[in-house]
Image 1 (spheres, one colour):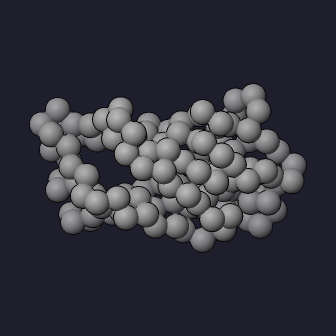
Image 2: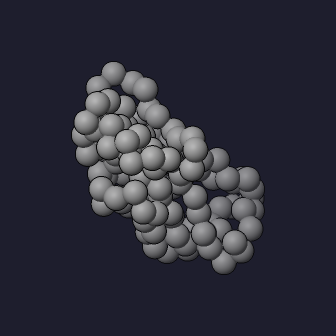
Length: 120
């Protein structure tokens, strides 16, 4: 948790996104998304930067869920139902819808997003 994704666009990042590509036949898929919200490496980095309040999740380009995150440095888990990909693979996109404003910076930050499921 020493690094993070910082959206870096003008404003507070609304509409910016992370896009994950899954290889064909991703082993049995996943059913949980885990998010470390904000820049969690230190209390100062976390409070100075904006954090995510709502993420819109897309699977293969189609809206799938809205993830409502707490303003917390703890990991947050979201059950998604089993998501599997075909022989051609697939994508999962997370688009910033709303943020908690940082004390010093507008940039919205996510330390980590990862997936858990039957094969993990």
